[in-house]
Image 1 (tube, one colour):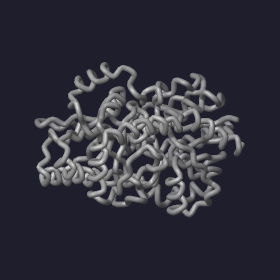
Image 2 (image 1 turned 90 degrees about the horizontal axis):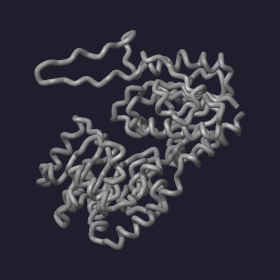
Image 3 (image 1 turned 180 degrees about the vertical axis):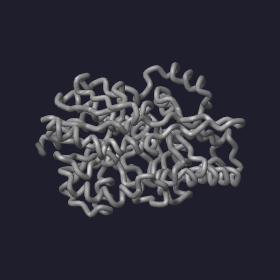
Image 4 (image 1 turned 45 degrees about the vertical axis):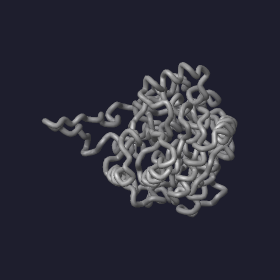
Length: 394
């Protein structure tokens, strides 16, 4: 069985959820399926794929490098090719050139590891992984491929031999928005890097690392962007209420979009919260995240929607007690290991924060349950189940 996988969406830094899935699932599939070619811009992300099965495409399709703008001069815009940016060029390559590779090399099956890599005119059998339907659940959030998602994907999904959804909630949304046959969708859960995200072995060494990172001895933690569906304004409102009883800072790690930060600034001002109370740390090195998870008093994650939800699972695996929303796929991932709140009710979130901080026994119990829950998810299992889908079709 000869399989082709398109990984051109993986960038050099590879930090997003899509990229995390593509890198891990293809590396683990390569261990159990030798006849799989991976098309990529950055072969270094796929060390488990044999060199003769790594096909590097031209650098012209790489994402444009970020440019720095000073207060004195403005850097010229990055060069375009045919009037297109790097991401658009990769989409063009996927849709116009990649199908020729599939046809000429006589593959048995194409694995589109993200829905943005799915082909409307695929010359062979096609299996598509879908992580979420956020653009349709939250249409007010900008998405540069909204036309493709609304007008092209429906036909692609109906023609595909199989769709892999990363949660039962994503499967439900695929049926809801695209009117798909439930039998055409298999649910295969994602996972995390268990060699990285795990409880610390040396507590004193980890405590020292936390201090070196500039974090306070006690803190609440959230790993989240400030996109509307992440629900950060309500979380900070709730923290403002809970802080009247517990004087402990909230640390937020994740990319912030400037236009969504204005509302958060107004909320902080209303609750007299300073930058010492709510600390936005932006991007954080992946290698330091496990320590930050492990030493938080509690991990707070009240997102309105997740296709799967990596951060709560990472927190569980590192031994953090978690307060999470009872929405979308989050209960599927967290199971019995979390304290659940209503993400639409600020008072419910505040009560959850107060409950977890006031009960040390509860925190200890949730840490234990979290470590057990995290063991249920593995990339090895995901790869085996994905390969079974391939075998069923070929």
